[in-house]
Amino acid sequence: MSKKRNKKSVVARRNAGLGDNLLATAHAWYYASQTGRDLEICWAPSMYFKEKTINSFGRFFEVPREIGGVKIQYEEFVKPWKRLHRRLPLFPLKLFIPSLLGETAHKILRDQTPLFIKHWMEKRRQWLTRFIESGGRARAGKVVINTHFNFLEPDKIKPFFDALRLAPKYQERLDDFRDKHFKGKKVIGVHIRYYDKSLPYSNHSPYWMKPEERFNHIKSELRKIIKQLNTKDYVVFLATDNEKVHDFFKTNIDHLVTYEKTFHDLSFTLELHQKTAENAFEDDLIEMFLLAESSILYRYPPSGSWFSYYGSLYASEVVI
Image (tube, rainbow, N blue to C red; front, side, top):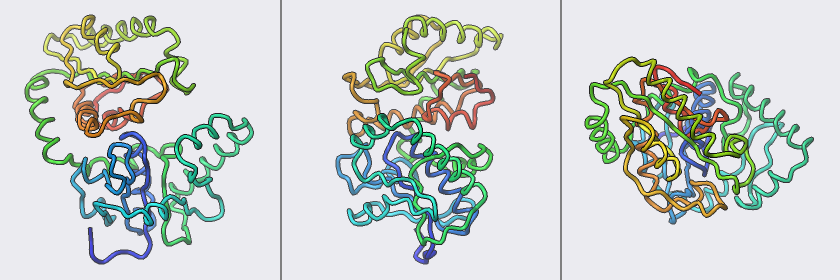
């Protein structure tokens, strides 16, 4: 953004779902704020666009000149040689293995990695978290952060999220929905991250071995929350990635509203954001920011989904 650029910068580079990307960038911003560096935001290539030079951050948000004193560097289109350069995590002394093998190969290696190597990687992850939190001084001119590590405390990265502004066309759609459905009511926000049993095993898997049982458990928990509100002036806003979840709760929970969207076939092979059609991110983006309007935010499963992390920073109460 600024013509006069700091020679030293932190590059926030991630190509995953919206929640993951934002968390990685928030951590990069915090490190930049601690070390007097600029922040380069490089969400290219993006899984949300076929054109791989597009820096998707600026398609979703207004790009600020600075956040909390940190100057923001941003290019609308990122040339291939720059994308390659920014893949390398240039931490001093202890390095993550660069993910240069592509998403599929990287996933296979990750899933088949022996336990002792996973333990070693977790130790490195913890070290890097402490490195960022302490403002450790990296010698490299560019420090690339392409993951969100083991979370910093929310109050340390919240200023980054406070500065986020949706692109005007998305903000207008959010405002219209909020005025129509939320005005004058208590909002119970619900984010349900469904995980089909046929998908690769993850920390979500144990919660979805018996889907119908989980549906009924969530229904019971929501009814408890509704009862505690002790008011008829409430609305339940459901954000989910699965049509079966949507249909079940639409017929089992009163005063439930959803943001109208088209659900995409998971085909039992890939997670949602890896199969998202171009421009489908628009609905997900608005849903993410609508969750932040919640009086009470219910997140399931307890293993967490970074999609609802933004909402958890602003909800008056969070139930997991």
